[in-house]
Length: 343
Ligand code: HEC
Ligand code: HEC
Image (cartoon, rainbow, N blue to C red):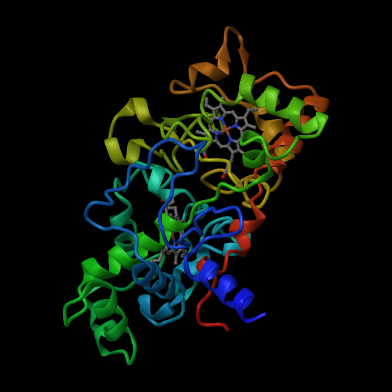
């Protein structure tokens, strides 16, 4: 009896399961086998448990906003892969209306361009935009750091994560990046299929084949984006939002937007940079019959005289069945990413 207990304890302490597999450190960054290599600069800011947990607190803490009314998590909700299920255009402090739809946050360590127009080139800089934007949190970095230094618990948490006696804005940005870097979604039914652990239904498999032929050019790799900017024919003119042109001031970029990754896409409605579509059916109706011509329309969607992607109603249903296999229930329920202030 005794001996058995000791044996089990030793097993647990040595970090081994009965298959002799080392127990995974839930706070170690690991690239899923079907993903490309990460691009984040981990050499400056490695992921650590303390850093991630601190980032988690900051992400859910409205202290980052001017009047303590809005946290990152207001616009980026875990249940829907950290997108915004309610607002077509995001809403910030004082209910200020933004002009874009809040994208999902997932697999950020693999991404080179942030925001729909690629206005930010490094994950560490994203929160600066969010905190200081008048239509988001309307604060200043200096004042947020001042408030954090005054708090009853943050100084000690920052010290434990980064050392030093005073919280700096860089430490705050690093903690948020560590948290977002760990937010990897790679356990959807699709991933289990790719790794040979699960089968797709006939409909899902046919949907995948259609996807490979008609969508993968742009929604490439298992991140489902080629990280490029393209015009997928939503509009013929771009007065409201010229997309990538706002950043490059190059006419040839007018109306181009970042190709979004499609993980958890069944959960992240509304769709497109302006949230104009509520359902995947509407998205596919767009590609099949509403693609609009313009100077910058992507050549893939302009084959001779015909615009868009030819899709029958049945093919649309198969594609939707496939897109549903990208939902990752583990990601949307992962306690490491949940609100740490509600126990
Ligand atoms: C008021 C709503 C709102 C708040 C608050 C907010 N965001 Fe966002 N977030 C957005 C919108 C809208 C975009 C897209 C902006 C654009 O494309 O111009 C975005 C984009 C992002 C992106 C880029 C995702 C991608 O794939 O390009 C990240 C990362 C992000 N936010 C993280 C954060 C963090 C961290 C915070 C808190 C410090 C935060 N957000 C606060 C609305 C919000
Ligand atoms: C020519 C490149 C291209 C092709 C081909 C393409 N897409 Fe897209 N897709 C985009 C771009 C760019 C966007 C974002 C456009 C915007 O918001 O202005 C997008 C957006 C989407 C969205 C919205 C995602 C979100 O988070 O809002 C879905 C869903 C989608 N595409 C599915 C598909 C499917 C399914 C196919 C194949 C039938 C397909 N796409 C083919 C470039 C493409």
